[in-house]
Amino acid sequence: EDCRALWDRYGMPQHIRAHCELVADMALALALKASSLGMRIIPEVVYAAGLLHDLGKMHSIAHGGDHGQIGASWVMRETRNGIIAQAVLFHVHWPWEDRLQECVENDDHFTAMAVLYSDKRVKHDGWADLDDRYADLLVRYGVTDHARKRIEESRMQGKSVEAALSRRLGVPIHEYTAHRGRLVKRT
Image 1: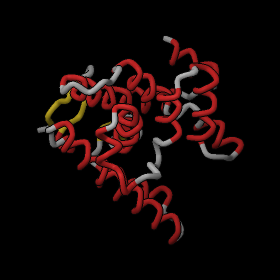
Image 2: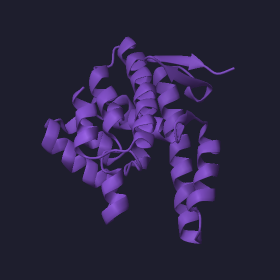
Image 3: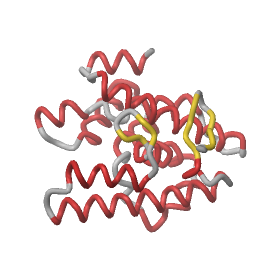
Image 4: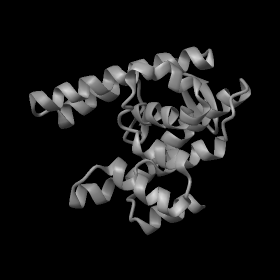
């Protein structure tokens, strides 16, 4: 309820709420799997981070700026939870790419990695694999060589995070979606 109240306070439109719900579902499923393996993960914190990851989106569309940075500052002010704020800040790009596996193994960074990956698996308000998600991003935003290069770099990082999470969780997560906190094998 607290996350949804923040959606209202910061004017998040319905289509972004639907997107955030699916991102939160996938992140929660990953967190529950990690928790079952003995990682010190608080699934509710991961779920909240998924719900709030695009809190700054509408502000950045209307006024400019980085929606991750804007959202993270609001989340930190509102929740005082650095783990949630970190996940919001880094849900588009993880800056320590050379240490992805180490970060996935680290309980303190797992939330951010789970939200980053989950965001890349949701296209609008439906599930997608990484290639489908990024094909859509190329069509919508790949208008310059620079934009296309950044989109491809993000896709490759998504693939790296997917591989790191799959190794850590012992599950080929690209084969799954999520439903009510569970990973569900796609057919």
